[in-house]
Length: 61
Image 1: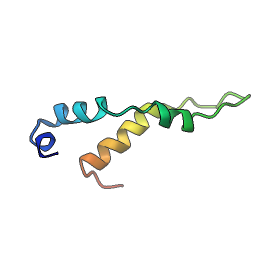
Image 2: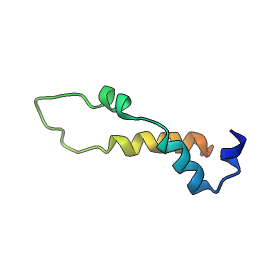
Image 3: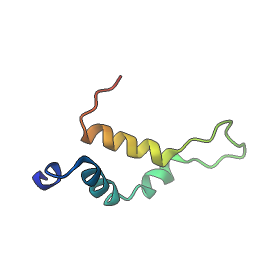
Image 4: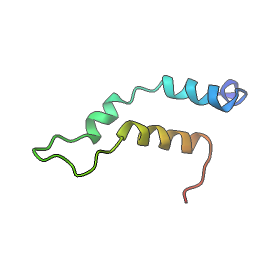
């Protein structure tokens, strides 16, 4: 864990995010519907954002 915090932020985040498999999370979040949603949401980006927010200790606004 200390090794990760010694890296440059871009390398640290790449190391963390590349090791996480988000497909099981996406299977739960993306529900099947007969009707198309009004707005397309980028669920992978939202999941990565939450992980980065916790890792970088960014406060909730």
